[in-house]
Image (cartoon, rainbow, N blue to C red):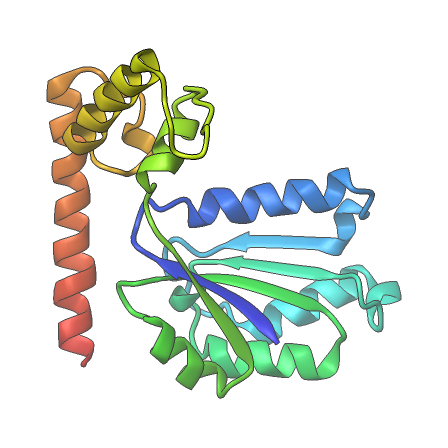
Length: 202
């Protein structure tokens, strides 16, 4: 089954996918066995079968290798990607991880597109504990009991969390005007491309 990562924009889906590719290679997998492609913009004429053909023509020795990974970012921009991924998995014992924008697909849509051949996982912005760790603050959890100093640090961090939002890119932004500009950009993207576009598709 393919693994599908869905979620809000800027919730580090792409960063996670690239990090996973690096981890596979660092663990000893030959870099030729990791096929990472991003489709941030629609590319006319590109299909999954075409990518499959090009890859296995380059590496014919991997035709039946079960350690080949296809990491496909923003796959919703590829025409008929669902059937294409299904055919790819039918022909080769490969691993497939794909990300999809919530502008066009929610987890139920992924399930329909892949006809039950995918597991969908949702990525979200940072929770407060994640925000604290992400900003490099180290707080020891003594079964929920904190010192006065730790309580003050957490209180200060929570004010920042509420003020900056929970997106990773904003975790270290101090300048108010820059923070507001980034948040406005995120809002415009979410409203115009996700909410409006998905309503039209429905």
